[in-house]
Image (cartoon, rainbow, N blue to C red):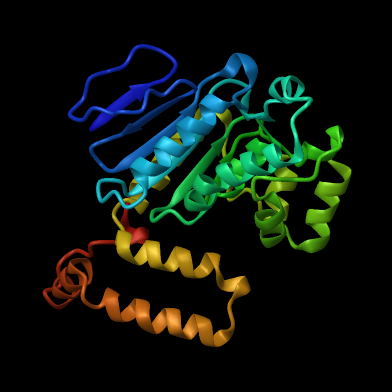
Length: 286
């Protein structure tokens, strides 16, 4: 393990020190390049407090552009991945002005948009409630793995709010316009089977095997070319706003760079020498 900073218990020493003091999450990067960010305030359902906002931003600052990180896993302890917005905090800000609310959202998107496009695969492991902002956190992941305990809800309208934290952007792209409006207008919760049918959930596993399945998937992805994943991810994430010509330009420019990478050159060498491939999903056990 490279380092671990624990916001929900005593720190463990590692090779690197972290300047940010995590308060509502644990964050570690292991020796295989798997980073794990675990929200760990289960007694209050891992809400988006100011401390958790700071933890997310610090994690993004560490992971983004970090060659030691191959895959990022997001998780939550207890019966909630995250229950979303801190309603208690909203009550305490009952006299807040519109400008303050606007600033808070812009500040959140400074790190959330970076997390959406971060240069490695992101897997959300949902083993409970993913409501409101928690649903938003799951949707910025590239893959959602969920257990039978998972429930998803665009809950905002129940307290007279519109969806935020990117749900207006991410959800229609995953489920389509009509289904997104259904979930946003009704604010109904959906179980894991419906979430899978809608395309929100990538894989379903039993609660007791969920993290093992996530770890195995992450371990396989860690063998891939990070450069190729990063540029593919950014291009696909922007594809719905792009013309055919835009994608052609991204493809041509990106592929020109990929041909120069050490990963590609070693993969070609191995192919010519009839040696085992660097990255062959079908042949990997993990």
